[in-house]
Length: 307
Image (tube, rainbow, N blue to C red; front, side, top):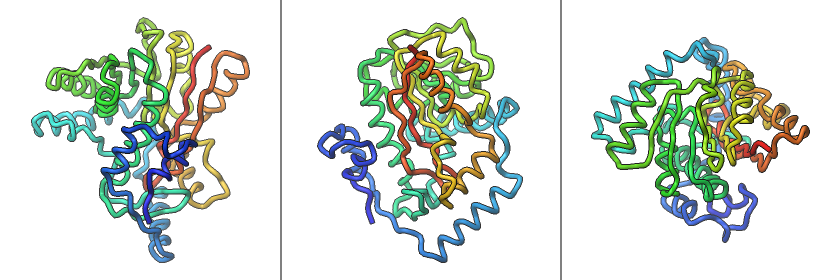
């Protein structure tokens, strides 16, 4: 089987002819063939997931992991330096090339090792084009290696890019990207749990989080208050959204088990809906990708803006 550009268009709710050129190029350049796991392989995948969830490996997220994340990004920084500052070395380790993936609420076996990264890249490119084409500044909070900012800078080169992360190593990595590749990109330290209210945001700018806000769990109020105060033009989040799973679907339920074991983002979408009901925010789009890694779907989109 193959996931085609027509499938991506249907996923985004548009006609295939409306797909941006960048998405078509990604879809045409990568191998999106896959096999649906047979009964025996399916059972083994479920057993693997259940054993992992039941083990001590999935540790809870939260501020106590700050040092762990800095060590992780320090490893990525050394990899980046060792590669001669090649941008391909910025791909985070959590995008794993050697695992089954979730697609349309079932497990599938990709033919290409780059399937997850390529699928993610098509989705990211679509939402960058749809919502960020008119902004002049972009701030990625929890920017990690900076590879999302690089992708945004390559796709929409006129945007000024800012990375923010609680890890000094991540900030060093992003600043080195700007120096080595002459990109208009810089980074500074930021803590989701204790936002720096003195930080000024361009009112014509965009706030982005990609697989980052998940780390705050249910403690997202401080960051939301920060955004409501700063009033960026648009906020785009690509995160695991607990409320989009179907508890009556086995594959979704396994993802929920993992999500809750880790303590990932919870209550964020309902809080945005309550702000919208109070006419303090406007939700522009909520879309589940029905795609994810072995343990969860981390690529759902929520796009909104403060009023």
